[in-house]
Image 1 (cartoon, rainbow, N blue to C red):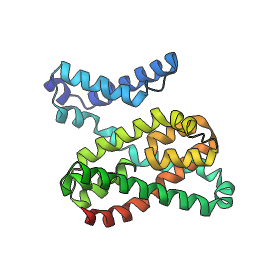
Image 2 (image 1 turned 60 degrees about the vertical axis):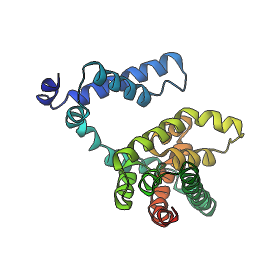
Image 3 (image 1 turned 180 degrees about the vertical axis):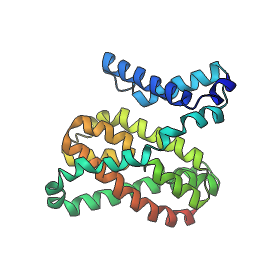
Image 4 (image 1 turned 180 degrees about the horizontal axis):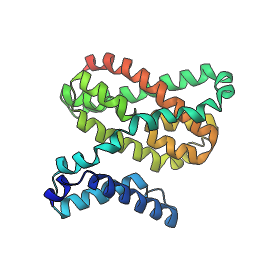
Length: 230
């Protein structure tokens, strides 16, 4: 089976795409948050790799083209933000303060849990950029000496968890303000959370897109400082 994959340049893309489409169909059919298309795609790809005993390196070689789309896809998130520039100007100070607090909360929580579970410095810095988009998180992890591949996995899990639990959290804490909901999703769950925020509304999606950019920049600076604390 590995030989089949090695001879194909699109096998990884095909099974990843099929897994995502199945996830989309399940979510549309059952309307349950746990049927997140990305989560379903990950589980189905893992099942295929295990069932046919396919090496991850072989799969990754034929699925790497999907990674090339990460950066342009992230850049495209600026479009909904552009349509909401007036809201951004009106609430600029509050938005920046909220995002600064969100990044600080993320870094402090990683520091506290790493100390609690006695993680090594390398493991600690691997987790620091858990709430930013993978394009930024991988660079931060590599720069600090972490395991970039694990960082990507943690980032994806953080995004999926935020996407799935975002509605529940907002209801639980009675968060109804669109700007607050969007900023929270973007700061905690990056692009995957933003996909959910866009389903809530245009303003939520725009604020979540802004949160990805600002939180990413703040995390680059903050992570380099927090890396010295453990």
